[in-house]
Length: 181
Image (cartoon, rainbow, N blue to C red; front, side, top):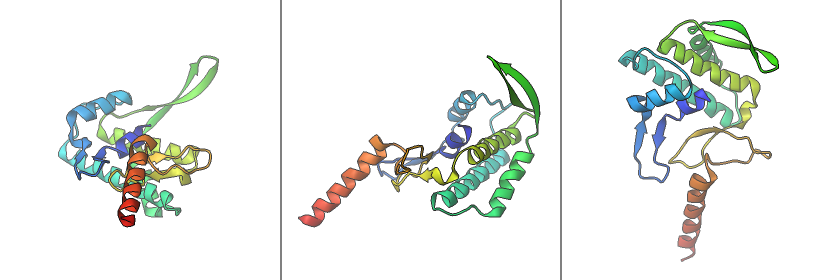
């Protein structure tokens, strides 16, 4: 999804070294991300556009935090999300795929304002189509990646059980062993 890759563009070393990287400031990452999601931009973001992108990322994180904690997002945050989407108008087109017809939304603008609107719309579509209460933030305090818990019993605690999950199990084991010694 567009929104979760964008939201997780703040990379933190999940192993606990304290290292982090804001991938929005990495031109190669931006170009790869745009390509993966079939988005186009005439240039890399200007300094002001970068500020706006980071504000959007913070907004999405605040909304996810609300859902992950079992509450509802602030109505002002929802209003801001709607304003971001409104800045990126689309034209609806009926398209035929295989045996069916579908509705496609074609952006009318190019540039970072439109890309921000597409990110916001992707996020809003997830909220509308799925259960927002399943949005999670990785329980590894060194990671904090956002993910959608699609497990049957809604018990997923880590973005990746093999990485963050195993690391946290080892940390708990070592802490218990240290207390026992």
